[in-house]
Image 1 (cartoon, helix red, strand yellow):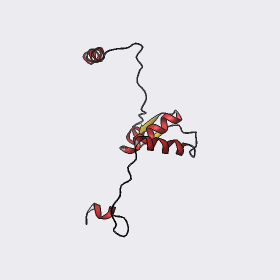
Image 2: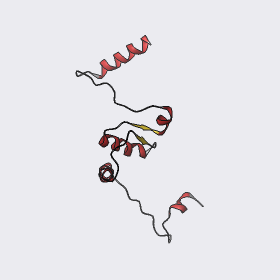
Image 3: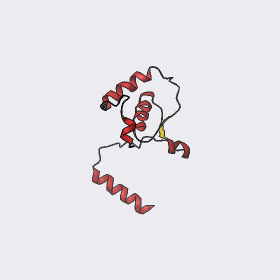
Image 4: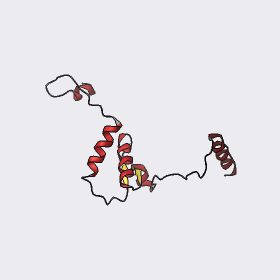
Length: 103
């Protein structure tokens, strides 16, 4: 018996897949937000497709997020530093190389 045998609908009919776009997911998350409490301290996403939903929730609720391993290790994903002026990619690479040599 293969994995596909378990995926067949009852009655053995043809399989059908229901694909959703990111826009569909975003609409679903917004609808779901209406039903969720608003007092979350952190959103934890399960790796793979759960991180996308967690990211959307964290953005809408304006709370930090992490993945499951990060929660266990005490890491919270956060934003990086913002650039004060427009910088070329070459300048960023140069700065990173300089930083690596001083460490």
